[in-house]
Length: 365
Image (cartoon, rainbow, N blue to C red):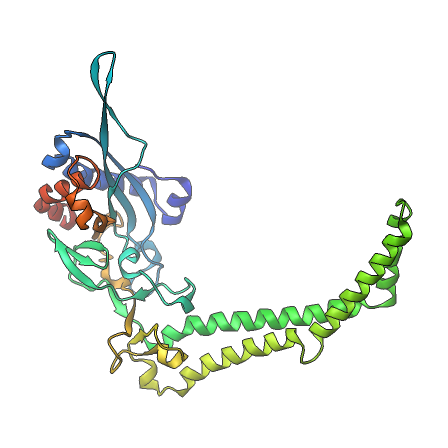
């Protein structure tokens, strides 16, 4: 059970919390170990380990900071055996420390389910993304995109986000770009004005002359520096002049900010509150971010994690959500056709022979 100091601090885990949570993860690991496929490691060397992760979601309405469930992971690996002859005897050597497909279970990590891919305009700021799509289940676990989920509660894992809230990260991002360009432009103009003062010109020339005094071709160096100084001045005058490239970039950023803000301003109050979707094939902002109602099937619903999914009357150390990650790679035709023990071959057998009643009892206790 790995619990590094920075993660403990981020999760606000007390020693008692860590001890109790570790015990719950170890209970789940024991269920995996009792699976017939894992309990009889023929043709592979098995390994189990766990870790404390960060927090599930930021605190907010319905989930105070002191009640955020602790999150963790339990992983199982089946390392294939290598068989060879040494001194006339057949030797099996496991490949622990090498690479193999693993089973990765996360506990209470709701963001790993409700936050998948997202619009590029959000730039990772928004705690949300596209609504996961259901698929074929594995045992009692529901498939959502490429993850498999077992829930303790019937409450939804995510909630729709409004059109106004979906556009907010884009507007904030564009405002930041505009303000940065505006401030940099103003500073560059001020710095260039000072750079042209007689005092600064004299200081530059004095530095060149001091350096040239120790050079065999000092006069040539001075001529080069004078020429370079003139070229810099001409370039900056053009770039920083009214209507120049720098001012155009500021104006472009301001126009992009205004166009994004105008999309929200044009919406009626009820339109701003409508559940949003994102159409990657559209070019205009108001066509990319729009109300899900009446949109084409290509417009993907936008959602955020449902903080209220978690029961805050339970201890922070109680498992409330189990997510199986990276298992979809073991379901491809190529993987299923492979027969040698270890990796996905063993992973599938572990999932197939897992005592799911025990898993439910562990999750619901």
